[in-house]
Image (cartoon, rainbow, N blue to C red; front, top):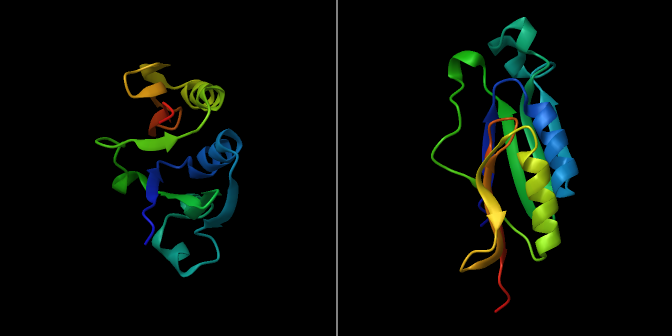
Length: 136
């Protein structure tokens, strides 16, 4: 079994996944629009180029998402996408990129459990936790 996060966006899924691909060093495996699919008839014409499904792989992990039509979109709350990295410099790079033009909720710093830990909401509204645990 694999457990993956699925994110919903208000029309910015394509931009968000291209940003995440660059930040996280992943690869977009799928980026399907409504256009040309049976779902095309279920959305307004101005929404047909929006993302029906996106899939980004980072190593053996996947992050998925899509655009939710405005009447069905809810702002993300009550969760964070958690990233665990091995090196403090990598945690700093990723946190800096994710928090740029977003909001830092907890600065990336040393904690009692981690060499680096921080929380932010990115420019697309997705909440993130970046964690670099102390060596055991």
